[in-house]
Length: 320
Length: 268
Image 1 (spheres, each protein chain N blue to C red):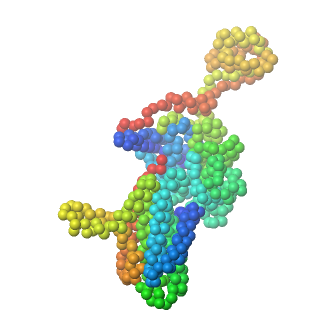
Image 2 (tube, each protein chain N blue to C red):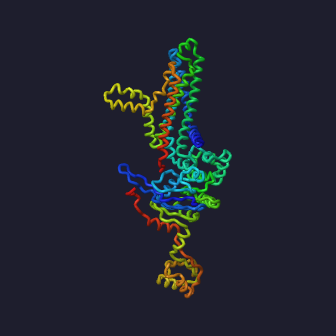
Image 3 (cartoon, rainbow over the protein chains, first blue to last red):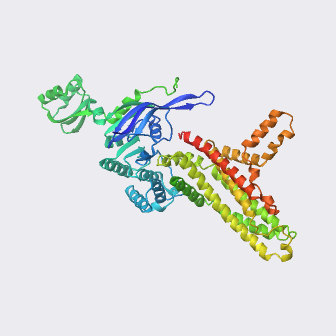
């Protein structure tokens, strides 16, 4: 059973007062996320990531389409007991302390007073909120509120957790702690669905990603599959290369760029064609010695830019 | 039901931390200061003025709380985005809304109860210190329990005002909600004029419209028996019972409307 499944999930908003036109915030999103996956939901600002999360949390209703979490329709009270959600830039009741807020949220899940207190303390420890837990939230910084937000999303030990830009507002140390926390959730079988435009986080954490642009799904799949065949050249590290040999190789177009890294030692960027074996054989024949040969692959960032830049389309629907 | 209670307690906690209950202190100060100042007036009149002032203050302080907190109950949650973390928790939207309503009603009940207690303490002191010759001129004893009927109906009126403010806050801005709620409250106090409008206009359409409006608008004048209890006029239990029934029915209808709007709303 999929942890999350959407079928042609669509959301239009009416824009304009006198002649309202439907603005396509999300267009026919079909997606499956397996149980236990860390799934990255990527896209530039305004791509429809938060709209999708709000639809899954039933903060907004779909114009058409269908979504399920843990095999049940979204909004089901039983499902709500088994999920957690961190909204983007969370804001809480600022008259409560962090401890009181977490205990209040825990009470909504029906935990006893002892359980509420224990859960609140454990989670605040885990997200690194120390003595500040007894301060009213109005005195918290953005980063601290983000940590409280993550703690409240985990108050019920959820089976599926939805995190909207979880690294937002955190310093490098905080980002690392949250990354470790997400990996910890994965290790105990929790499905993590997180939206981000910070691609390095996705590269570090996700088993699969989906890229969204202009309200449409551009691509979805395993990161390894997306990036494996995107080899766009080779990096060749050689010793004992003379400047004359290098100049000839450059003239022939066998070497795109060369960086001297020591006496007679060069890092060469080779094009995809001709095959690197031929250039290597040629250089070795002229006295160079191979140190290493590595494929230059697209990073997720390169892939993302390629996908997103090709996905431009109008957001106003004429038919809906 | 449990979730409604939890949300309600949280609203009450917010009222306490936002110092809403300080209004009780303002009430007590106003009442004590007035009773000292009015003490010099004609014998027999001061107790009526204090009763008038006390009952009116309970009503007005409550009304201000009901309108100005009621209109922000939902709007503030949406504007500050705290609703985004709350609604995905295991609760239905109506539980959230009814919890908000019950929380503000709880705040008002405590407010009115403490003000009533303070009111009766001031009246008991006046009863004790007034000479017997003055006391016999009073239409009713200073601590006349009949005033509790007026206070109970004030409470019911406040519950209805809160429901109306909550209804408006589910779809409009605080300014507009305050304007509409206060407007309805004023119109509801002059509602009886609409009932008899047919006697002063010739057009049957206008007369029908006025009568229809009379039935649709909340009849707030029905909840006001303050003057009657101050002047020791009887307020029959049947009248109180019917008014309570009317008020509760109206509250239920308004809350059903609020739930219907809130349940369909998108929180963009």
